[in-house]
Length: 376
Image 1 (cartoon, rainbow, N blue to C red):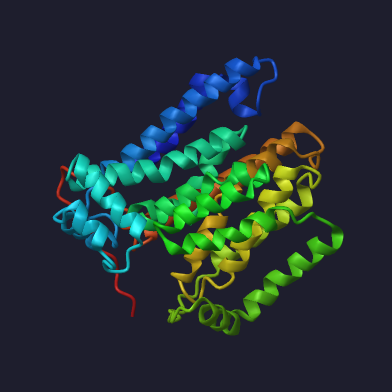
Image 2 (image 1 turned 120 degrees about the vertical axis):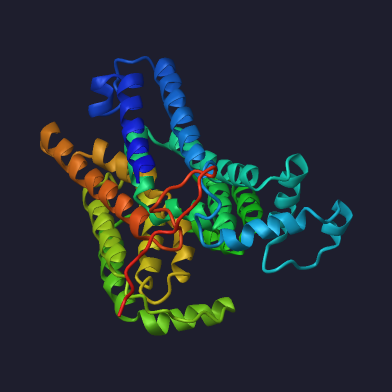
């Protein structure tokens, strides 16, 4: 866990070093000229993004359950010629874009560690760009991102992690009402993981405007979906053409946390702000999906695409809304919320078995899987 603690320390230390004390503790310092502020933010996000890529790129290939299939497949695909690759009609359950991606990376350097580096870069750089483009509070945004389950996906679920990274690039097109470009980005992401198509719903959902009736309905709907999660799950999987088996993992904590975060957003956020309104709507989809998280851990992955908007909207609401009477109250709430995300993030890293992230090991060291007590 030392590597993760060091990264948390690094993003805080760099924030103080680059922006200065006043900027780091409160919010964007208006005394800093716009151009200088942009340069400082770009420098900060560039460094923190590179450090995160290094964490994923330098990890031992044994970290991540799905790598046991992805890495041998990388080797096999690069035994094919380009002509054979183009003639492939099917390779395991991989989408064609991911197959081409494997061959492209292997054509540059057919090495498993290099492949992990490239996968990390393609997955994490869009997240860093999204924070740069849409967040005025990059430190808070990183804390929220590290506390979300989608962060761990980069350890194991390479295809979907890349697809999620690509979908984040569609935010600009959603906001600018560029439907054709938005659809193109989502279709591109679906070439890496077909589940990306669920994000097509984001375009209309973003534009639903808040109102008292809508807020009341959305709040009531959350417990209703949770209570009816079994028949809803069966119906949705049949409509989607999947034969998903419930694992009944009993996970409910994250749903409760998400529901509380959503309540905080709708009751304290500036609903007249388009970004707050739109990104809160998108996060709400993640809440609805998470209501069924206790039935299937795989099904929850459909909600991963809608978790990322939280890294933009939550820091904005905390730092800009007028709900708080004074700055002291704002900072107290900010510290409590970020502390929850930090704590949950570290807990998730340590306990999530499929990511095998708890015991970090560099690729040049021998990986020893952590011994976990058996459940009786």
